[in-house]
Amino acid sequence: MGYEAFYKLKEHPFSSATEEKFYYDSPQHSRAVIKLSHAVETEKGLALLIGDIGTGKTTLSRILLDQLLEKDMEATLLVIIHSEITSLWFLKKIALMLEAPVDSENKIDIITAVYHRLLDLTNKNKKVVIFIDEANMLQKKPIMEEIRGLLNLESERGKLLNFILFGLPEMEDYLKLDPPLYQRIAVRCVLEPLDETATYNYIIHRLRVAGCTRPLFTKEALQNIYHYSKGIPRTINAICDNALLEGFLLKKDIVDQSIINDVSQDLGLTPRQG
Image 1 (cartoon, one colour):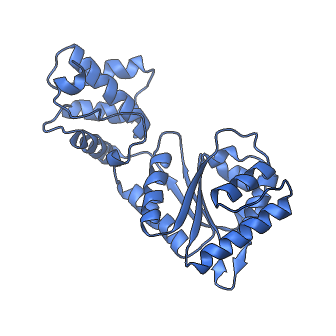
Image 2 (tube, helix red, strand yellow):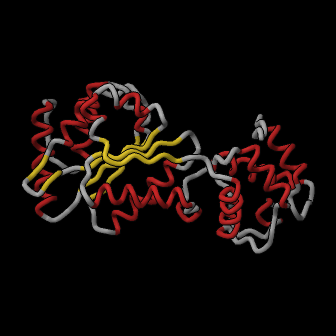
């Protein structure tokens, strides 16, 4: 028996994997989705979502992507996994994502193919947006110049392509390598850690989705989770997962603050001051 069965849960409530059904639509997440959707619908060109590690950028990108696809937009996602990519690789990847047929190592040929593909999509009344997750990995000025060049592609109807970049705060420093590109940022959203009330609601939401029908944490335990996690969703998940496992091992019907203290210290966390 695992803790799911012990606490009568239908599934794991605090997985570290990105699962959209567990998405908690906090006020700040809701605002970000609305603002970024507006950026695409009004063809602003370039928008940013900035947040520290674990604040929910990747989850929000998937939620927004699904919403735009439901609106019949041409939306696609590129995840950058390392910083050693070249501007040529980047352009070829964009062409591949847009299904722009090109068999060339020449940048002009690639951009021309992308341009014609974008014209074709525009003629079909499709708005096109490319999400770039982990965009803080784009650390070279030539790549910034290519993004700016792609944003320059227009038809008589307006911009042909939109970018939404998701990344850590240092992403802005790399964008500033190309000042004309940085000046084109039309929408900028920042994800902050959850406040205390939102932290409680986040935990309760995930438990309900997992089939929970009763409180599993005391009020004091919830307070401690907030203080140790500092409102960062990924850390909240880690604390709650470990706490429920410890509660199961101790055969505790409800997790108290002492369990939170113990697992948080095991995770090497220090409480929020003040």
